[in-house]
Image 1 (tube, rainbow, N blue to C red):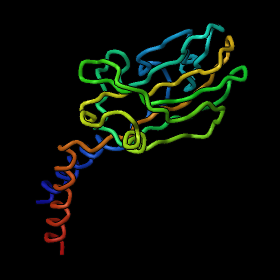
Image 2 (image 1 turned 90 degrees about the vertical axis):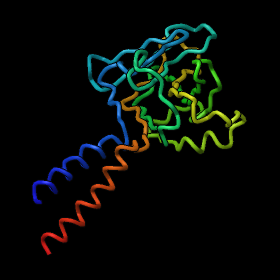
Image 3 (image 1 turned 180 degrees about the vertical axis):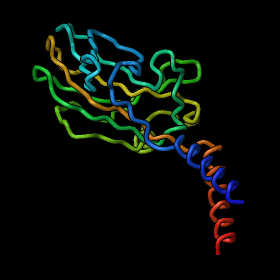
Image 4 (image 1 turned 90 degrees about the horizontal axis):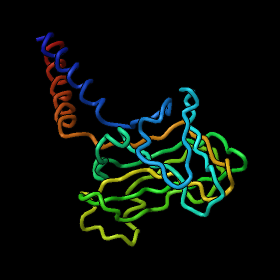
Length: 198
């Protein structure tokens, strides 16, 4: 009986690791799925700081998109996540940034962009509850469960070689059904343990 309890405990530990905050410490740019405009992105040799720069004064949208797995990681279904976070580090050449959640439908077509952080130089960690962005938005919510999301960082000021540095980007995911089952098993394991050793 002891062996069974310990095996269940091991399964629960492995399962619950699937849920919670997934943090990209930005030691590399593997999760940067897309850059646009005059953006230049560097991981500074794996220092844990990613630098996003605007390389021109052209009046074009400039920035980067982040998603788990990068360009080859498939889509991040918004219904699997409850929140997001970003940790700015420092302004480069008086640069500003803003952050939004970009949404795509099942065909990969652009649905809309929800502003999360307006133009700023703030370096404090920022978090958002995704439902707070989606629910009051003018976007149609009929198909929201099927939409994919990316975190988009924009550089709004057209100053050559200005930008911003970041140290973390994260998402909070919803426990998978398997994890919920294992959490239930955890309760059973505790019950049996109490019956066995009382």
